[in-house]
Length: 269
Ligand SMILES: NC(=O)c1ccc[n+]([C@@H]2O[C@H](COP(=O)([O-])OP(=O)(O)OC[C@H]3O[C@@H](n4cnc5c(N)ncnc54)[C@H](OP(=O)(O)O)[C@@H]3O)[C@@H](O)[C@H]2O)c1
Image 1 (tube, helix red, strand yellow):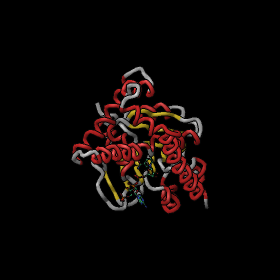
Image 2 (cartoon, protein in one colour):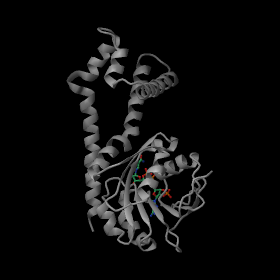
Image 3 (tube, helix red, strand yellow):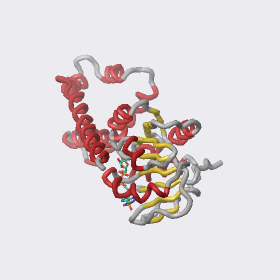
């Protein structure tokens, strides 16, 4: 039985909104009430796609899926097309609920989400936040985003940003780590395709082991590394002076600084 959606617009439907739609499609969500708006006119599979904001009845849900830098251009045209029945769902990294509320004063509620691209395979993480009252909608949103993996409601926007900095951006960092593992394999003489395949499978297998077994990541690492053995010698490099922890923390701090810059830009009138 297909899962119905109320009339919904996806304003901007590139990588991230496209991933949400692909995940929901594979969960049998019905998109007959959905419209995707993309200036390029590139069709979104299974969704009516148009190039400009439609006139006519306002949607009950409106998902903002464009880049934060486009907000000041799009909001003045979009806001009058929404109503006090519309729930505005924004995935714009760093753009605060208060900024959105000022630009879209007439909507019923503003919900911020921070999904990651793995929602496409229904293995994603989506953080959600709203400062507004959402009596029934909260559960409904939890259900919809829960179809795509983990859906986590945050108490504050700082928490949303923290989840976003780890999970939203995370697939990019993990992809880099897999590539680095593959490059190291090539450095040891493996053919590039073999190195790529084993690096990917190793990360996939480790994630599955970590998910399935009741052991900590430290215990998992210890099961691989026998005392004074080869893996222990490798871990000593990653752990020296907290090298890996520091690198990852610095990576995430840089992304957080950029998030703060984007939020400041979006706050400007
Ligand atoms: N990518 C991620 O992993 C990720 C994770 C969390 C949050 N986000 C957030 O998701 C948002 C979109 O990121 P993305 O990576 O999906 O970017 P993207 O692939 O570049 O998609 C941007 C979309 O905005 C559309 N667009 C551009 N100008 C527009 C206009 N004037 N009116 C309506 N739509 C317009 C583009 O249309 P065309 O398709 O016609 O070019 C495209 O569909 C950003 O705000 C980002 O912060 C992304």
